[in-house]
Image (cartoon, rainbow, N blue to C red; front, side, top):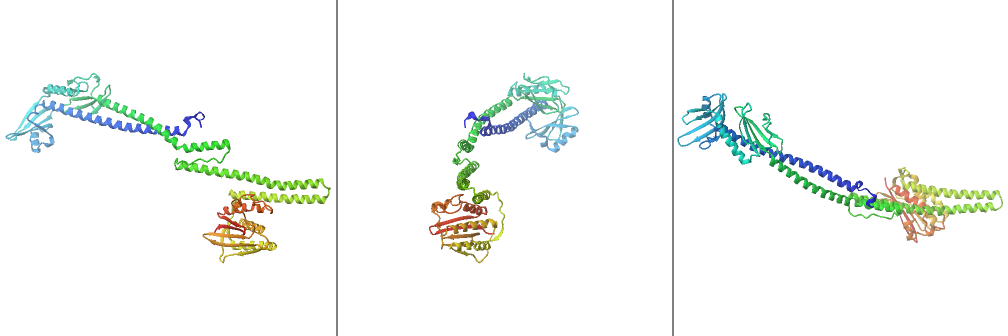
Length: 532
């Protein structure tokens, strides 16, 4: 089929490729968002950690004026011995410790604690002898060191990437670094969130801390590099995903094309059959997958059945035309002879009787054909009941024995001692036996033998009818169950070739089978029916 007769957007291949692309794009977008959020949060945590380190350095300068770094060692407040802390707090009970330092040597060992009480900052030193020295600290004297610390840390990061601002509780700025040009200067401190982001180009991550005396410390760090990394990640991700999406869509198209190759072959075969009426066309099985292969096999099987039905229909039509033409020709001849002869009432009556007899034969042939069709198509319900084949064959033997004796034939019946029971339609089984015995008697000459046997085994009942008639040529054995088929040896005898077709249809409707063996010495028909 050419592309001009089919819209590409309506094909299965396009829809499969489209759905693949949509699902891939959706899953890739979800993956991108998850990774993006994870990276952004991770880098923000790193930034917050650096801001916290800067805040600790500023607080150290603000409290100590950087005087303890040379001889003293900072220790956590929890590491200060309880007796030392108790001695210090006895000096100033309301003291809130902020920092602690330790100095040790051969002769001297003492602790220094910086704390806040009554809105004042104190330095308390506990010496080895238990004496506590107290000194009031003026934080305003430490501002030069704080500004110097600002400058040193800004120099490490760059003036456009970092800034510091220390304000009094009233909002007056007492120390600050040079604010970056991109930082908005009219935004007040955020006292509700310790960490927050100020939008801009680039945005800033700001840490706001309220110190012990109410002063407000703000430390801001540019998110320029984080923003660039996220943009680079986004560019790399979407470029890679775009390339993979295009390649994947093409691969999806090719894979879908391969998967539906069997369907396209089926479509081509169906179009060929529609245009040419050639039901002999078959589609090759090319391992396109179990589902496609099963579809191809089902199509071929359906096509074979259709071809068989059409062939049989043609043969049946020809046979019906042939078998109806003969009696119709006879009736027409009788009518013409009678009309052209003397106008005698007796001749008209005789003609009417002959016409009625021919019509009866034609009606019987048509009824037999209809019964065969209904039986083969399962249109007629089989009325099954338990019946004894022994009794049924005895009745048939008694009925046909007289007819065999009239023709000088020897008819014998052999039944087993046990009763053979089957579940079947009694009338139809009688039709089977009657048709086969009719043929045996018809084709067996005077003095011949006819035997009716019954046996059972392997879950099947076996009805065997043997005769010593003229036999059936080997070339005709495979056709004798076809409708209207008659071997050359039977064409001179009465019949229409439907009896064995009816027998075959009834046997298969009862889930059985029939076989035939024949030679010049006679024929043997064996019917197998399932036992109860």
